[in-house]
Amino acid sequence: MTNEHNQNSGQAGTSEIGKLKVNQLIDVDNIHVLPKRFRMTTTPIQSVDGDSLNLAGLAELKASGSGMFSQKGLQCMAQTIGHMSITIVDLRQESHGFVNGMAVSWYGPNNGTNKGLVDTEAKDKERLILDGLIASPSIIFDQLEGKSVQLAEPITNPKTIMTEEELVTGEGLGYQRFFVTDHHRPLDMVVDQFIAFVKALPSDTWLHFHCRGGVGRTTSFMLMYDMLRNSGEVSKEDIIQRQIQIGGKDMKSVDPNDTFKYGPAMERLDFIDSFYKYCIHVQEGFEGNWSKWLEG
Image 1 (spheres, one colour):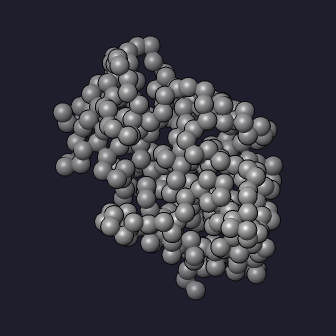
Image 2 (tube, one colour):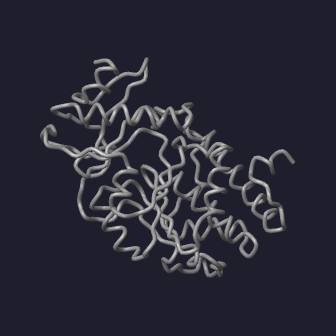
Image 3 (spheres, one colour):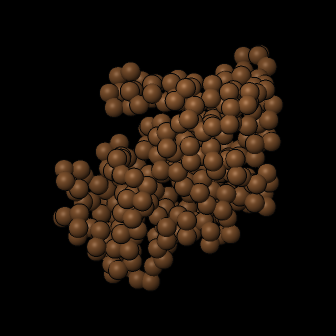
């Protein structure tokens, strides 16, 4: 089956873009439970090996993170957070959306099907795929072990298909997207966009960060947010450790035998180190963005 057929009809899941195999998956079923790896910066933290951890400013961040959620999962999450003003921060570059409240996505090798696309290209591609599902009388999803929810029957009309922005804003929440390739650090342009977003953020806003699994990209941006807010009072090591303690990824835990992930993981570690230095310079009065700071 060609990719053109898959995008225009939405019927069968697996397709090929050139030589790239793409699976049409259900990420999360539409049930009223918290998403995987849900955590909040207000989560109580125990001391690590008897050492005290600097928690200054952590709870005041008003932030949380998780993996992908369904429509009912989003409702459950909003109830758990219990804040009046919540903005969902979508970190997924890969095409994704919602079918009858279930989270769905198009998954290729290493979840990098949109790598190299600019934001508008990725967004237009996603819209085209979802429009294909709307036009299709029947939708069949692929089964990928460990990556998808199994569905016994195809989905037929009537059906509700939405982008994440449409679903989130329909629930009365704010929405912001940053296009980040899975397993990679954000591009410098994206870092600049995030810094500008944080600078303009109303003080009463709760941010919920998410990617597909709630691990690498979510932890990266929660670290960045923590550093932007608290680098003047809290060391880089304590910021990293307290994000681990509430349920984030230990970025130093990298398998050198993983030929695909090891290189990007090391680049991400270097980026986090440099970003903390940038935040210190901001605390000292530097007013430029990340790219300007890199120019030296």
